[in-house]
Amino acid sequence: MFNTTKLERVTLRLITHKHAACLFNILNHPHVSEFNDYETPLSKTQIKQLIQDDISAYYEGEVIRVAIEHNTSGKLMGTCGLYNLTQCKSSAFIGFELHPDFWDKGVMFEVVTGFIETLVKQIPLKHLSAEVSAHNARSHNLLMKLGFSLRENSIWHKSL
Image (cartoon, rainbow, N blue to C red; front, side):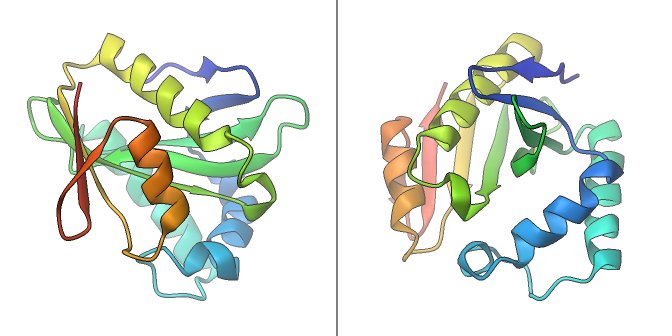
């Protein structure tokens, strides 16, 4: 369902267990975990299980989580994914995390734009939602730039 996508600065590919060590560092970084809904610190076993759950849910048609890899170094920079993907694939929630070394550089705008462009060619996606912490100003700004609008509490929405 998802084809590896090379963008200007990054490559998006389905998450695999080879990403576990870097994902462990990203999700446990205090500036990232502050905005996530995971209870931290996450153990290496929990990271492996999270990846396995994403892989299994991908094959069940419920989740598409991609690794964001730097085109030059190949290093994992973060992840982006769809979850709560409806059975007809027309609606989903989007989530993302990025290592703070790459914040404020337009990377996540490039990622989400490229991710959505790739997805709409492959599945009949029509509506995206995002749940973002009230104090996560960077993500709010990103979603506004991407054309999302705040609908209720901390739920953002975009029609494609």
